[in-house]
Image (cartoon, rainbow, N blue to C red; front, side, top):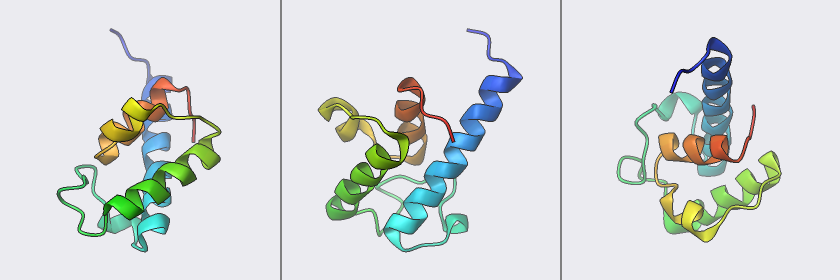
Length: 90
């Protein structure tokens, strides 16, 4: 699969928007959430905050996430990948 500069820019923008949303939801600074952020590496990413994050993501990106997607979204990278599949943009 060939990716274009436009696709890369869109993904980067989406990742930064998701990082901001995660930071707001978790009560953190975006700079505290590196690209490698996951439930295992972020002490504030509890099951309660996960549910709150999912609600905010659905509202912000106007998507309705499937249960499979919700349970797979356990890292910043996976959140971005799922939202990208839904066609979400920053």
